[in-house]
Image (cartoon, rainbow, N blue to C red; front, side, top):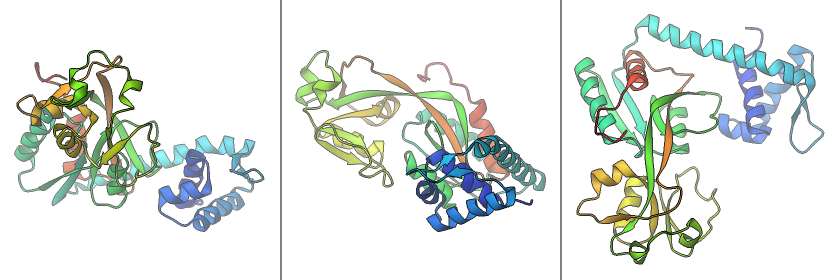
Length: 295
């Protein structure tokens, strides 16, 4: 290829994030490396892709026309990489799957049973992570596949597929918490009480608090904190049903709740899943809820 994949990726990522520095952080490279890659691409194309006179780079008309072509080239390259893995029949000796606590337990139970029957000699590892931590583990090669709450966009090197499943979220407090005795509550009324909120390692400090907050990196820890009466919390309903016994938690009546969230399956495009990972991806894409499991 005349144009380096790194330069094409740097171009698309800069458009996606809105700045060279943000693109560099997402690609785990220095800002100078990203800037140089884009400058080299401009030299190869013989056009200026970004207007750099403003605070943030803005696509030129030539850049806007080039963007769709570059995205198509990268997408074709990703498909070719996946085809190469499939044709080679590369079987993983170990498959690491990072997933969110939002995943319904029935789905994981079905998945593990089916995986064990099909690939009994492949070591299978499950990690728990949320949002940005899932993406980080995939980018570092620590995991091959990940499940997370659906997001509007992902880094260029992350592949994503919307799954035919949803997870229900609701607001809970300990049964002995003062809020448990209230009737209908507005979300604004909750702000005077401590919120227990998800806050992954990479997102730490990025969300502005609207009231007193305690945080934890996963929902299971938040559930434990809520059971002890430390505050109110948004939690996956399936997680509460599975792990909170003896009615330790109470759902709060809040307009607009419960809410359904979409689930995405993610992988690293640079190191596509092998045979077992591809099977798992297909299995989740085709999964259908059994009657009575709440999906």
